Image 1: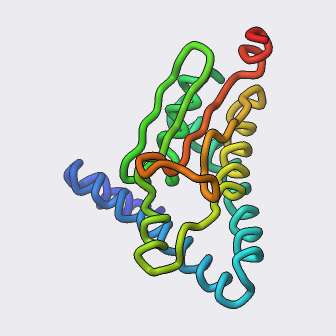
Image 2 (image 1 turned 90 degrees about the vertical axis):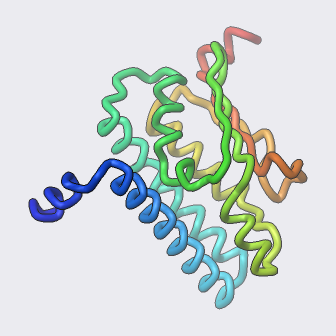
Length: 180
């Protein structure tokens, strides 16, 4: 980014800057959806899913590293992990989500998924995103702290309630092994 762009962004009112941030996040996800649909149309859902999973796995590592530095997260705790996870483009894109950090685990739940709702609106049905999201979250966690294990509670193609598209649990291996 050049100085003119940086100065212009810094001069924007805070509310406009936040609106711009969310517009760009939506644009990233629009591109993701468009390229996925193009690959799916030409090569099928399996090929599109494989490519998507590989892209998100790589992005997860880059994003975890960058967010840890940007947000100055010095420890590898579940609390710090959730701060970083909540700042990802994936988490910020979700319309409605819930999260909590307990002494032994952290939970992230997507209540309303924009991607799935858009597919359903277009008559494409639910996308079985579990392998893509699981791969992303495992790589994100591993890059943030190799001691974090990721557990999928539910994610399509799993059957789910209307108010829970997906739910993920994160546990530190050292904490999980002490409980057993």
